[in-house]
Length: 378
Image 1 (cartoon, rainbow, N blue to C red):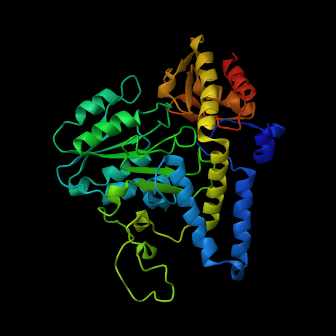
Image 2: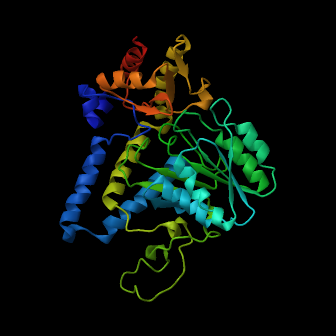
Image 3: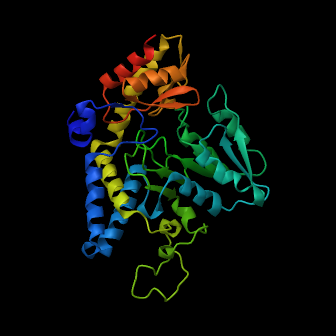
């Protein structure tokens, strides 16, 4: 309860039951304060320093690295997931005759950047779903097809909540020399992750959902062995090694940083990354494993509730290892069910014919029980 009163007072007051973190996560009080403080300095820029600006984003890289088991040198800051996916699509050495594999029914942000490679002869092959869920077995079999050079997947499906076994697919890709790209948007914050254990080459994630951070914050992880092997497709002036010396900016030296900063195109929204830092510090203080367990417990409640209700189909897999923070439930009339939830001030999403509930660290058992009770009304 202390967390709710301190960081999410609207939840403690009962203003609403917010179960829609897969859409937009709320900002903790400390995050709002961090943004406001930085913006106040920006309003009087004589109080701002280069050390504060660039120290803020350096801290962001450090916090992100801690969260995913990476090195800060492997983190480039981005304004959203899509930009990070585009870094992979444009920087990886893909060309005519190459194939990129993904699952069908992926979120568009992980589809269109790869479809855009068609003019240079790259084919995006979508592996059909099985019973509406990602078919990992079919994807693994497809790895041995001629011309497969990359696999790109969402860690967690935005519509079904299906959780991909990253380590299994990543290991299979690494064994074959196939690049492995991950959209972590619907997983990171609700789940814990170690990019090395999962053999990830490139991972992109925005901050505005499960990381409880401002819009316009995000990052891309690029495995250290790939950083200097890849050429950025967009060139930023601060991506160059000599760019930090503002007294000699016209001593042009086209030499990229030998870390992931070479992929950054800034000016970044510094005030929003100050907010990201505050939110990541909160999640790290709470303990990512503890957050994961709490979220899993709330999702478990919905899964168990659905077992004895013939009128409600559980779209999300029942197996705990195949779930994250999203539980998708398909009642006989999803639109009517959605309206009932809205009238009860229960925030949720209607996605692909199912009610999507997505609880986080500040939600309670009582809130989930109330949402399910409303869903179960005739």
